[in-house]
Amino acid sequence: MMYFFAMQIMTGQEDAYIELYDKTFGGVRLHAIKKTILSRKKGKVARVTSMMFPGYLFFQCDQEYPPSLVVRGLKRTRNFVRILPATNGIKPLSERDSTIIRHLVSYGQTIGTSLVTFDENNRIKVIQGPLAGLEGMIVKVDRRKRRAKVRLDLNNSPITFDLGFEMLETTPREGQ
Image (tube, rainbow, N blue to C red):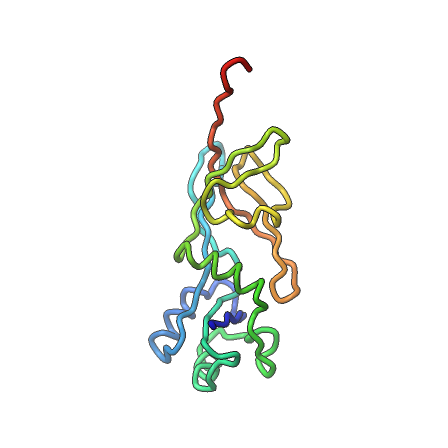
């Protein structure tokens, strides 16, 4: 069984931390989950990539407690804050949280958009993409901006983030 752990570092230093850790220590693969969404500024639409969980990285280990050599390396890397819930009391994410992180990491370093449609009751239905399986956690949909706000409870702390989607246009059936 693989366990996922969350760690907090200085916000904005995610990529630099991973690079420094890999060069200096290594030992575990760190995941900085990024997302790409459409953004409008002054009428122009552009794809913007940003951190899904600013200030947080995730790593996997096949033990319920990461080896002390790995923990020491993580702590000694510049911009380290803590391993959750506390560096002196490291615990893996719950099975539910690990499943969500595993799902998101399966889409690679940067999560793109999902393909969705809306049913007759105006509820979102995910056809494919990172939002698949997270429908019950979607708290708000903005069709104009093509974003869905997702709420998760990682380590019993509520976290919300936006993921982009593309709408699959449904054609009305004959006679409607």
